[in-house]
Length: 147
Image 1 (tube, helix red, strand yellow):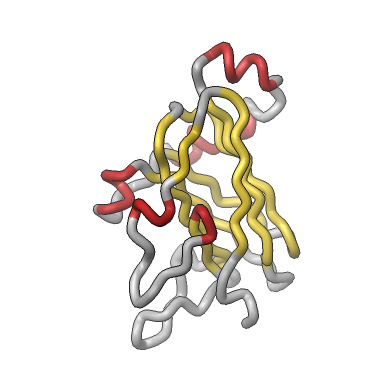
Image 2 (tube, rainbow, N blue to C red):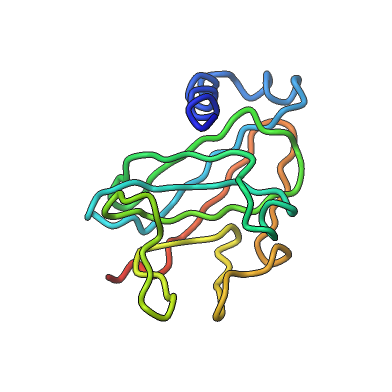
């Protein structure tokens, strides 16, 4: 399933803006900034309210090689609607967010709207974004990138 979604995202990048608007679908380009030069992958998930609140599966996702400074990820096609974005740099590419013994993140992470967690991840209302038909863009600055 992940492979199909990623393949669809990669194949649709070249379509012009007018095609997305006419199709009623959205294309989302996310600029993840503050990516460390340590490498690994930038893992990103797009969640609707239900999947975000229940720690469910994302409606779309991408795992891409980390590019120091900024990694750009495009998700398409996506149904217009209200979503949340979670992302992190999996520096050691072990398929999980490394945490301390008390559960604090050890790798850079971020949320849509650059929401900052306080003892737990932000609620959906703090991270929600609206995708309209056509081209959409978001910028997320990784937190905890000083490591």
